[in-house]
Image (cartoon, rainbow, N blue to C red):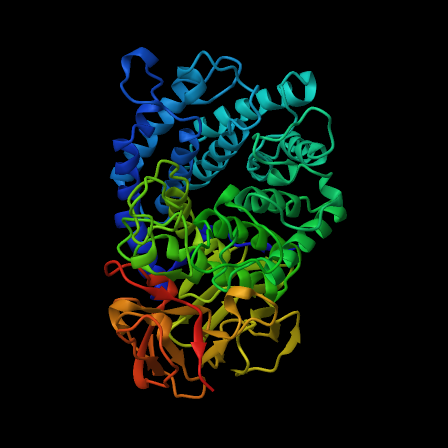
Length: 603
């Protein structure tokens, strides 16, 4: 098993991800904090008397704050920031001041005495506890301060007492998984295997006890993957975020080959049958859920930002167990597409839902009734009623450096390409690259005998300046200390098609260059983009773009001229049109506009 070089030991030094991390640190940290302040999420941590407030608290607000605190820890590990440090410490102090004597910690239940802890399976208590644990681990790693860590250990001890020793809760496993993977992290941080055993207890009991009931009256046990013991499950079902967090926890069970196999099977099921080309997961808004194989509608795609982030967590764990490029490829697909589209270019506003097609004129056609169909919003917003996604993307962008490298014995694995420098346990690596603008990467390493460089699945041709052998999508190179290794990956723009029966994508093409999925927007190409047909054999020119960092692409297409009549005899009234494609992650940043990923084509 390869150990990731931790974020504290790796710094991104330039290029695409330095740009995004600077925005994350300078803008997003404050933007999320201020909106959470406006919406009383931080006020709730003070646990005021319910009769003294004129706002209504929510049961999982603590989890929103916890993700922000975790992100703050990652930012502070790389860049001291007094403003951020002070506000994070105030929030932690409020959490600790209101911890119950028995170790329980949840602001909502503290200010809502009419509700009893651990009686409602869908109250997100274990989910919230998990995010508090992850935040506390990150805070300890980044600052060395252990007061928060000690507090969540008391919380974990309370959970162990209630669920394992007493069995006094009204349920056995939580409706929204998260505590399972958090407990593994807590065990690794503290060295206390009790927490690992508690995580395994929750996994072993899921779908395997008589106490748990469906979390809502409108969903069955598939919704949170409680329909069977996990050891018997092999497909992703129900709520996409819950499914991926749960599967990530199974992948954390490195000493259990059954859970490892289940995690691998679910990963394969998602990536081969239930994932958008952007990495989006969960195709339907009802239940924010997976449905059936190949049900991937574009205009009503749900594809929650948090689901893409959860897939990163799953793929990272599988990659640690077995170095295969399919896992790192999915991390890359999510980073550059499905997750990154969830945040605006300026770092201030967010998408919860990430569709692959927008037609603003038809987004709400029910003008004569009060009933409105649920459609993806067309512009990002600064905060949501359920605002899990903004702090989630904040924490992921803050910790991207942990996704770059891992070490096993005397081999250094390079999973993601970014200008960076890392030093850990005698291994020092420096990478210089303009990726994903181009595919050229310069690497120098000391302290390792072999480096293994991921050759992405999208890459059809590459050059290395040293002899290599290929295994599971990685090029293994024997090295001497401090010699320069140069990897040059060809990165042409290519048209992609679905090889399966995906009704929404039949006879359509999508454009990719390297790891980046592209789209057409009306801002650049005019209206009625559904009338555009791309020409697959036309030249495609990449054009540098300071606005998007990744280049834009220009090519030729055919545009069917709209007529004045509603219906008429067929006439081939098409004209050649220059098309401008932008990275999918950058859509909806320049005002309301049509947007398409999948397009008709002309042979």
